[in-house]
Image (cartoon, rainbow, N blue to C red; front, side):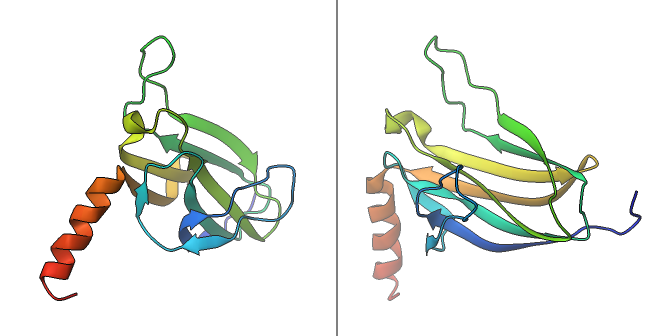
Length: 144
């Protein structure tokens, strides 16, 4: 096994076009942001460029903000594993908002790990649209 340390860079993060898992194409970045409005089917996440890690197991995880399932139990984090396909590979980790959107509000933390070590992570703040209006008003009042 390679003794090289993986070289990981988050190249894009924010709101993306819808991801098609059947396609080899990664989604296209629409807006670079950490603040995501709670709108149904909005796609958000990040693209990481991973070098020097071919054939290593990559674990991904999305921690949701205590979203209940149909029986009212808090959903477990969404996680899975894939193998890094090449020595210079781009990987998209993202999620979407589904109905009802009001219970999706909060911090969504997304992580990538290799050999038990977090190599990339981002936290997105999902909020209702009126919260975004308050934030904009705050900065506008200060002259921005």
